[in-house]
Amino acid sequence: MSNSPLISEKVLAYSGNYTKGRTSKIKEITVHHMSGKLTARRCGELFQAVGREGSSHYGIGYDGEIALYVDEGDTAWTNSNWESNCRAVTVEVSNSENDYPWAVTDKSLQSLIRLIADIAKRNGLGKLVKGKNLTWHQMYAATDCPGPYLLSKMDYIISAANEINYPTPTVEESPTVHALNGKNIPRNTDFLVLYSGIKTTGTNQWGFEAPIDRNGVVLSDPVYKGNTKIPEGGSVLSGHGKASVWIYANVKKGYRITVTDNAVKIDKRQHRSVDGVNAGRGTNYLCVYNSGASAPTNEYGYEVAIQNGKAVGNPIYGKGKMTIPSGGFVLSGHLFGKGDSAGQWIYANVKNGTPVTFDGKVVRVN
Image (cartoon, rainbow, N blue to C red; front, side, top):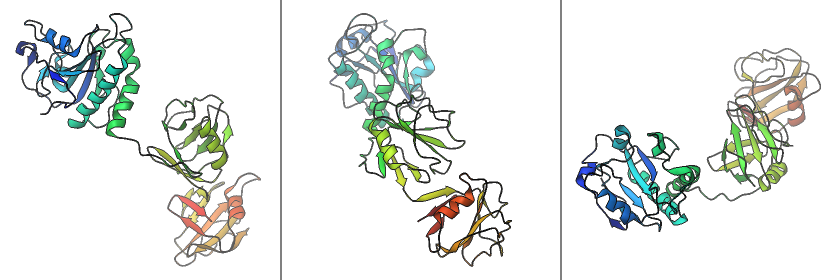
């Protein structure tokens, strides 16, 4: 088992202050603070004292220097909890002053970020997750360690360390592509955020938001307000500042959104999610029929035959039971009231010769 190449020296702990070997695979990294302003060497000298009955794997001095005290293949006595000691690599970080809130220097903080990224990568821990594979002393004992300052920095530390091991690809922004800052996170200045799986976005009014259905189809033009309700099974795209301007200029009703970990992409053709395939056409349903001789529909809607990826004729209203073309399908929409019904969507977007595709969930035209 290897140790970090980032160390500047070894100050090995007394053999009676740690356990040789491990009873568990390394599964986490635990952060501590030194409760004082020390160099990495001075902290290590404390663990060399006979009868100390304590140690850690690494220490980071106030100058950012890193020292090794206990090999990663051995069990340091750091976490006040035997089970966590057995599965953890532990790091002591010097404070910048000998008092509350136990702050650390920027050099120490940056060294901590680099060190935990290295430990995570070499031990196959994957992306660091707060409270899971990146932990802190207070989780295992009644202690203030690692102090309020480091605790307040945990999200930043984890994000920065993950960025080292899993760098975000550069996104070249355009009218159809924009970098995504995150999912279900606070919408900070100029952020583009996707919200899903919760009731509302929880945002303030300073930005445009657009609701998106379960298949990525934008349900309405963006609205300049906050705390938008999340559609069932869907999401809301929310932007502030520059990202808000981008939403307003480029996201429209009927466009389809594709989301990756770091970007949002827009297909600016018209789309609508299908409510049923070869099923009953309920109120305001858009249905596709590609099996049997004809669509099992009544006269209350628009229908158009699609063959070879194009509409065969204009949509027809008031007939139903349209013949299904060989190798194609019938697109059928119920006409309901004067609002945005499925039938009206067909009438507005499909004409003779219009390209129409169906991917099993969504119909796309043009």
